[in-house]
Length: 49
Image (cartoon, rainbow, N blue to C red; front, side):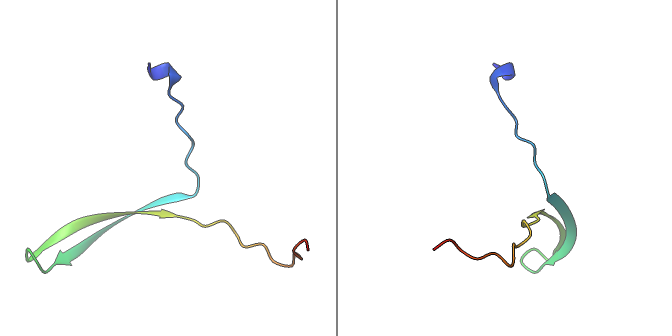
């Protein structure tokens, strides 16, 4: 049932829509790209040995 389905929250996701030339069909096509922002890198930590 619909109430049993859990939909996760998407964070740091961006959509880019770009019109590009397609050499195969000699036309302008719309392309959609989904971009995720990577988490920031942690610096200055020493690994546990």
